[in-house]
Amino acid sequence: MRAKGEDVSGAQEHFLLVVALVLICIMAARTPLDSDLWWHLRAGEMSWTTKVPLRIDMTSYTREGASWINHSWLAQVILYLAYATAGYLGLTVVVVIVVALSMLFVWLCMEGRVILRAFLLIFGGVVASVVWSARPQIFSLALMGCCGWILYRYKWQQKNTLWALPLVFMLWSNLHAGYPLGLMLIGLMVVGEILNRFVGNNGFPVLSYREIIRLAVWGLVSTVALLVNPNFVETWLIPFKTVGVQALGGLVSEWQSPDFHQAFQQPFLLLLFGVFIVLALSRRVDVTDLLSVSWFAALALVARRNFAPFALVAMPVLARYLWRLIQDWHPRSWQFDRAVKSYRYVNLAFVALLCFVAVVKLYAVSYPPLVEAYQRQLYPVGAVEWLARERPPGRLFNEYNWGGYLSWNLRDYPIFIDGRTDLYGDVIIRQWMDVISAEEGWENLLDVWQVRLLLLSPDRPLTKVLEYHPEWQVGYRDSLCVVYVRTAP
Image (cartoon, rainbow, N blue to C red; front, side, top):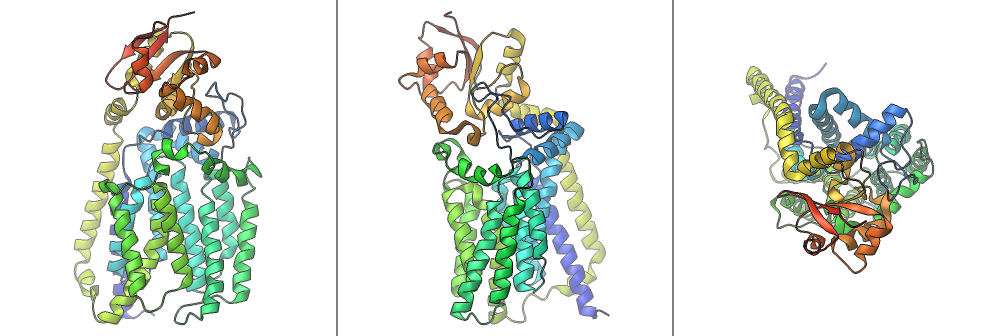
């Protein structure tokens, strides 16, 4: 039978957990406008209608028929079905559910008073929210959180559920190629626990050599489990193919290093400083914690797409050591239980209000006229309408960030390029960059690909050249884009 204080603590934890998760859901509810969303929807549609995961390119003329390691086929089908069922609202709901699940796993790994954990969870959500969007990458965050929770139970709670890891990685290999994040967590724990035994880290649970070997074996089994997908061994290659694209850093903003002059990136900096300051003030630090935080901090400093993985790793570590410091300095602080019991109905009303706000925001950000208005600010909607109406003949050369939108909304015109950098590789990407920059030989490249239509942003260097070029004339122009049509035979 539970003691009276435990019942109150349980009520407090449930209340603040719900509040934190609902606030995170409110943050995650946003208009689905990611440039990669559209080609994911097109691929999901093809996989669903054919009942076979799409593994060749069917939307571009530069890579038409080429083998494509479609590591996200299952996530694409989920997104497509959500869109086909409930439109933009369906996409937003998927993002909100997956984000809430990922942060719930973080909560399960956190220690300390519940109000402290709730505050840190919300702050971690602010850091991670940089990459929350309707795309397969979001599923990697939930699976990484699940993997971290299994490892937390194994080390900190002495509960062995490592058998679930292969199941997680099996699912991961069909949803997104972010599985190296989970393998990193396993590898860092193996190395960290070996070092813990060498340094004699007292005061923290340390795995025995037998437990370390067991963890390493399950890590290898999980690596093999990645093969259970339509791409088989090619799944192992996709992270290297993606990172190996040299043009990636200059072309895709999320692969660039952080720019802390931008306000939305500054919470990551606060979390980075905060977790290392707390670790520095702690008398003892677990080596596994130190290695994990340092490794994922380095990844986040290289590419800001890793803000969210860093937050998922750093928040449990920050909560653990910050709570120990608070206990050392003020052991009788953070007495909050009585307020929760005294205002139970007020708490329920507050949660109901937050849920109402979350539902209203879900509908508001997914309202079709609003989404379409935003699309006109970001995508060449007017040009697509003109091309669909006038139907000028010839191949279309397009902006990189508009490729997915065109493949979804302008299906009669195969595209030159979209966001699948692993498919196009450095050769096609470099050609695209040479053309838009009007580098020497740009006309030859267009001739090689038999391009007769150009859909570009007006500020590209090439558009300045074409203004006076006798073989090209403007077919359509607005403030966002311009369509050039080749007049020469």
